Image (tube, rainbow over all chains, first blue to last red; front, side, top):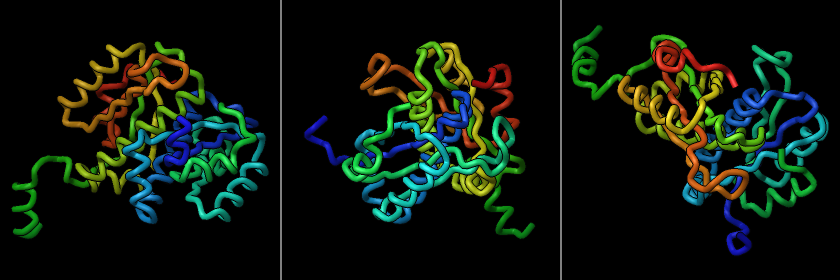
Length: 122
Length: 138
């Protein structure tokens, strides 16, 4: 994997303090993935295609709480990366408007790793 | 209805091209027999949703538009194994619905090539519920 270190990747960063169920978490991550994809199709379609053709790499990471998530979102935006914050409609499990997942990318893997290296996989 | 739209209606290739007349959703059926971790399931669901979205963009742009603008409703259901997912795929295709399958590259957790998720839709709620109504939420 080291030879294609900079192939595009996407990180889905989930708040672990919410204790979401597997299904809920999957849906929220899927939401982030779709929104980031649509955003990248508009702003950087070449990168998006490269990401899709390279297997559309995605990684699911966990983060402590809302504050950390928002801080990371700010850093990613400052680095010029595509981000999407998922706010749940609150039909189930959490209060309406709860921020659940941050999606970053597709972006060069190195840029994502630089921001998320301290986070553990979910 | 004007003559133009009548002609369009008669000659349109299939119902893919029409606006949906009710709420639309995307259904994700997870292969629960694989015993994947939560993060793994989430990433696989992400793959399936993106694939389904891009496919709908080509084949059913109006449905995709309705789905995106109504909050991208998604439901995650529990499937037993690959065979069951394939049989749902067949039924969905017969009903004229869009489907996307995800096979895992197998870098982590499960054998390479495993069928992890089947996505059906986005499509009108009742069309997919006819097929997947018996499945439980994950």
